[in-house]
Image (tube, rainbow, N blue to C red; front, side, top):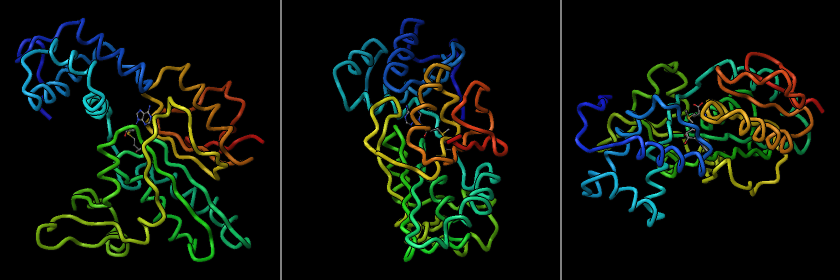
Length: 279
Ligand SMILES: C[S@@+](CC[C@H](N)C(=O)[O-])C[C@H]1O[C@@H](n2cnc3c(N)ncnc32)[C@H](O)[C@@H]1O
């Protein structure tokens, strides 16, 4: 993606503007932006100015202060949504080999999973595929995957289950054939996840900084590549809240650069970035 540097900018974007954007984002979403992200913030917000037909960032921030709808757009613009099907595949292998076998044949089997910060949906749909491939039968096992994100735009896209074909090109052909429908006519070049996968996933808007309406308990939580955007205090609080929502010995999966600090006594390490609640 082309970025604009300070010298090439179409609109004046001062340190004051950057500080205001940073503060709004931190106060609402807990996202702590580093100072070197100034160009990124400019490049993402300038599209809003153009879409709104505004002439300056002063005007934009006045609009932001008075319009809840624009605040939603502001948050959507500043979240980073990078994701992929079966990203960090070893997590999905662990679910298939270590978690599902212990559950699938128990009478009245029930499985509750949370994908927190699910972005465009590849993560929860990969989980649904993994569960079915590992032998979970939704007609006998009560299985639900809750998928949440703060970004309303990615959630809307995730709910459709529609993806550009390029998003599945690194998956084995047999996986694509089995779990995706090929688009035709105006959907040529796209794929759609099969309805049985969509049925397993409920997408909901949730800001992790807010109160959480769900009671749990969850068998496991995927919260991957989300906490990297938060400061240590916010991460520690979040980990405590997640531990409280997990079943005893429930699992937490985090992103590749999010290893939990040693003083996190709630969790024990089970594998690369895979943790289990201690009791
Ligand atoms: C980089 S994506 C990670 C997606 C997926 N978990 C993965 O690892 O592929 C981070 C996601 O976290 C979401 N996010 C950031 N702050 C959040 C918050 N306070 N509450 C809920 N979601 C948040 C973003 O909108 C974004 O979709």
